[in-house]
Amino acid sequence: MATSTHDLKELLQLQQDAFKREPFPSEKLRITQLKALKEALLKHKEKLIKAISADFGHRSEDETQLADIMPTILSIGYHIKHLRHWMKPEKRHVSALFQPASSQIMFQPLGVVGIMAPWNYPVFLTLGPLIAAIAAGNRAMIKPSEFTPYSNRILCEIINDAFSKDEVVIVEGEAEIAAAFSALPFDHLIFTGSTSVGKHVMAAAAKNLTPVTLELGGKSPALIAEDVSADFAVERLLYGKCLNSGQTCVAPDYVLCPESKLDDLIASFKKGFQQLYPDLSCGDYSSVINDRQFSRLNLLIEDANEKGATVISLAEPPTNQERCLPLQLIIDVNDTMEVMQDEIFGPLLPILTFKNIDEAISIIQSKPRPLALYLYSLDKKTQNHVLLQTHAGGVCINDSVNHVAQEDLPFGGVGASGMGKYHGKEGFLTFSASKPILKRGRFYSAKAAFPPYNRLIHRMIYRLFLK
Image (cartoon, rainbow, N blue to C red; front, side, top):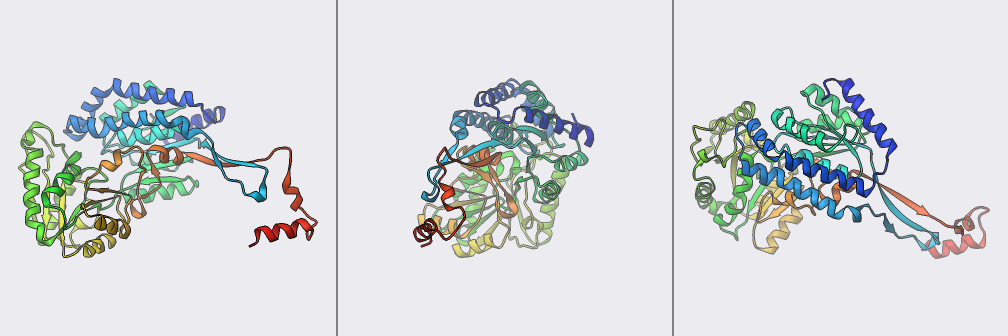
């Protein structure tokens, strides 16, 4: 474990030297590494589940398996299945002017990838980028969040079982180590976290001209159209909001509801929450990660109350679970309230009303581009209208958060919610250098156009191609 900037530099040099010795790992080696990671993850699964729950104070075992471990296992399988096809050079067209020749793109490993992972999904958001980096033939250094020390301990065991230090290594530390990590001259750096911290990471990486992928957040809207019922929408968005107690970067951040449906929507949320969590003391509902985040969320509630909002708690917190905050609906909100200014990242859900769909779209357009947008409508014209008039990193229609679990869909933000994408083939491409190659044989036609100019061949070329 690195404890200083010097240690970080030594680890980076170790991996860079190893990469120089093997700059293009074979498909067989990459698959062997991915299988080793899967084996180690399954071996330590039970310990990891307990460790994550300890970090959160309480985290549902099923949520850890469904939303953290299972997507990671499925991702490994997907990469193994498609890796051979992805690694093949891609043929490209050669213009008649340059024949005979062939052209192709070779997908070459970048080198050493830096991965800065968040605390909310310590498995999937740590190992997900790693899987893509390994599939592309890279080595990796990982900086997990300091908020999940128990999880990090088990992740270290997993990584040490599957890799040598010159292949993959985890480094731990507080903000000082994180800052030093982001300043290392990686061949690529991926950061998952808040927009404010992402700006610092990008600034540090820029000093080395290190390309970055930033998976940030933002206020992801859930837009309920006129043509669906409140029950229809709530059934499909509620779990996505309550998953991990709202501590999900793509969780619905606020709801846009037709004025005429507000009362029905509140009733549907009350009924739906009771159906999902009839007894909060049973452990299905996760805790807020730490006192700092719990206090921040309660201050948001206080601020909203003081500024005229109505806050509706959907349950009483259990006495046997610390930092349990049931879902809080917030109505009568306005933009002066702090809950409407930054990403909430917790179980608070403001509800705004609109008179028509274009008013709802205007509200979305007035805010920074979100990581996700959720639309609840069965009308194709409405669906297309919203898709064409809004920007978001990803979209679910009549669902929530599950687009992230689709391996064949890229995941990433746009504008303030991030840049770059990974998952599936896009992840392979993100961590690869797409090297264009033009290849000629014995016959070299290009010399016909060399000087001296103003010959017949030049006049023919101009007549054929300058038109």
